[in-house]
Image 1 (tube, helix red, strand yellow):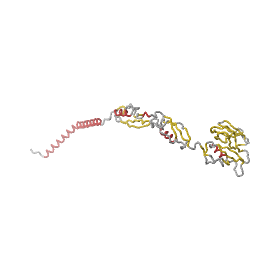
Image 2 (tube, rainbow, N blue to C red):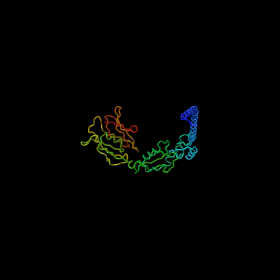
Image 3 (cartoon, rainbow, N blue to C red):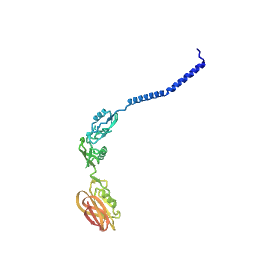
Image 4 (cartoon, one colour):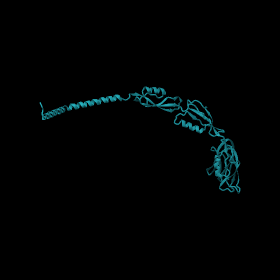
Length: 341
């Protein structure tokens, strides 16, 4: 039986409508199945991801402070921790190789594989006394201070040095105690003998010829030569109040506190301020002592000069008011007086 085209078209339209109707009826169950399938797949992926990339387990950091480095490394390895080591000098030679500090602290909970900072002692900077003979004292002192900067207990302490005249340059170390190579187990005090230099016991003669009174007083205050002054009235070709001659010139070196003579030209005419030479006889002292010459009038004192002198015959030029009193004292004790006339 042959179908007409019109019939075929009607049948196809009817079938399509039935199919669309069926799809409409199953739409909600279909969407629900798709959503459930997506959720299931997402859950499987999530579980698989975390199962694959799960972080390392947590461990307790061991306390290794005070332990040897080898022991500390073994304990770190057992906990799957990795040390980062920093070396540091200490005051005690016996600390070499021991753990001084750690970060994180012992007992902390961290993940396995974490780095732990360990500060390890390198021991003392020095474990024996070095040879300082022939070196400059100031340089050795600075080097030791630099070496033990920040140290609460320096291993080497320099005692106040003893000085000795020697042909070596001033400041050269001549001897030491304890000797080189002495093992340092506790802080050591090193005693040194240091050269004063070949000219320390000698002093250069100062040039005082031509100096006026003020300049002369300044020179006497710092000089290590004892001058015995005499005076005379200035001649026409001499300048009043100046030193006209001295026994030795300034190119020479003499033992400290050697005595030299010098001559002063005194003014021809004196007014209210009198220039003269104070003189006194004192005991001879075994070493130079500090003396002060003052003038006193109506309770007012003025210091003329303070110098070092070995005693015996003492002569000091002065300028002071007429009728004032000159007072020579040693350590605050008056040893001689003289009136200005």
